[in-house]
Image 1 (tube, rainbow, N blue to C red):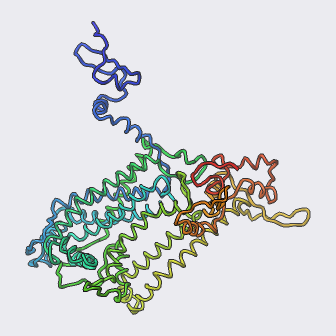
Image 2: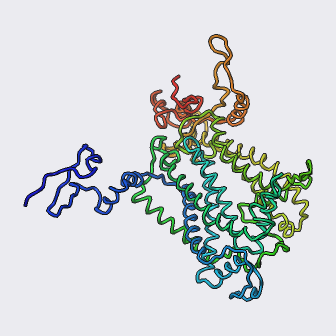
Image 3: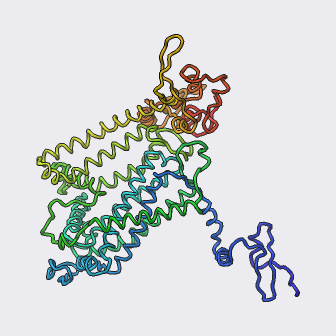
Length: 602
């Protein structure tokens, strides 16, 4: 058999590591690679897409293993379930406000005039096989998606996972949470029942309260006077096309940035800002993630099959002349509804012939964007206050950031007050109290409770820090009392092992920026220039860190061993050897590093 000479084929020689690739010509004219690394099918695809390199990088990606990281996965899997069930529902739902007379299977509403949207919702619930289960799966998964996003955001906030270089990813997550709420509102407004119609009517009032442009804005969105016949088709397009496309796109960008920045991890032995300790995507993490998806799907299906939600046939079709007593939106909009109930009526006034209904506008079109704007801006505010420009890949325990933790819980307390105000009428009925007294109580609580929660939370965090410090220095109590030859009594404490001690001491110790600025004048006596906001920055930095408790240093730990109830260290060299990540455990901004993140030698 004769063999043709080996010649380069196509652009193979450009892709080869040696700069020139060769191929072998067989008797049938097929040109193949000498040592192909991929199966023929995958190799064919890679030659045309170049996806193998990126896929290999993704499959080798290491993810740490901690239960709190599953909160983001709950949100992702719930979104997938909502997309799948929503696709099913679009096959039968009719997004039209055209008038029909119902003649379906639900007897109590036979002969009742209603919109085509409401009639098709009844048909899905009672006539389409599996339709009611799909409706409930869709609604529950949407709620779990928003809950998962909220809990994931709380985990990121309280552990400091939003710090450099993840500020952009935090902003993307903030926008995602806002869009998720808007998507949920658009979704439960589509059936056009009495409850959802009441919500649309509230939306109409929100837009009408916008100063000057309120009327034009309402006519633009509703296509005329409320309710019109355009709002359901427009909400439908936003709900099934526009918002899902944006949410999925942002979700993909969010995950890609997680891969680019590498995953954060909790402090522990062997874990540094330069590595990730965990499992690769293939085969371990993929198997665990796949199994967890079916866990989320199974629990969602179980709840959807057993717990009724949004029974539109009970409410009846929407009628502008009727209002459902005791109606509230889904939980993620409670704070806005509660704010509307707490705002006083005297905030509405007339200026130059224009009515300014701030008693409505503040709780709706102003409150919502302000809340998410503050959330999105927080990482940049904290970075400016601390002056910390280093990259952070290790998470913080919430107790080691007491002011941030206190701010977060104070914000949650404000939300809880507004959420309870959203059901003030129901609370008044069930508890036999005056609705006016409850409203006054919630108004005072909105301003006083966050202050109380802030200071209590800060003190609790500092107490926990002091307890950690004492535990590291003196060990854990054993309950064994020892008497010395001199007649002294003391309890024997057991020293902590390195693995237990590590998370208790491995955190940054910050100092206020004003204490690190150095001399106010240079060597020539010329006053150093300061920014216009320098005073505000110093004040905020003192507010954040004036009461901070520093981590235990190796010298302090050695002294505790030497003077305390444990074995003394034999030499200063042993004390110096007690380190974390090859540096003293209390090295941080103002001590081991300057504000630019460069190591500073003393």
